[in-house]
Length: 198
Image 1 (cartoon, rainbow, N blue to C red):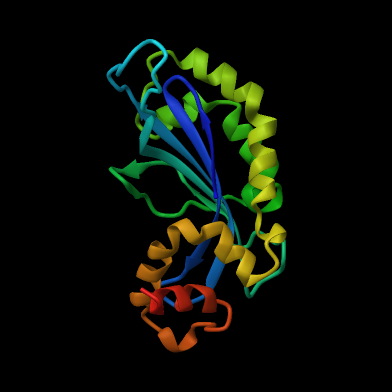
Image 2: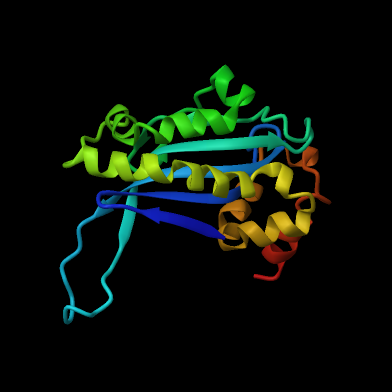
């Protein structure tokens, strides 16, 4: 399930995410919030026709994750990616304030979305317009992110239901594990079952 807040030049995508570490097979999940740049599209049809909305280029991502083998609601794996190289995120950035107060930190990031975009290497054409609208919507965006936090997802079946649209990406992770013998196969059983059904 993906929630989208779409503005003039940018869109903010919010969802639950499930991650398998390729190095040691540990599992993480929680709220993912991503800033995307909108691509202008040519008008199609009449003045009443539905128009294409394309928000393809990622600029910034926050992964407010718990480790499944860690403290529930502890945000041990919470991090962010301040920029992307094309579609690939930069290395994880860790900050104490993300773990200590992730929702306050997210609200602070959303209060200066033009600054976040600039730090990612993109200058918005009209930064004031989107900044003002995102700042006004920040409490709603944070609330949606909180509704997709790890603590809201207590069962593997629910986690799978919330990430089913991205099951192919989880399958990619499962296929590339350096230490597959460490994998909690019970916890990932819904993804394994869907992989075997392909």
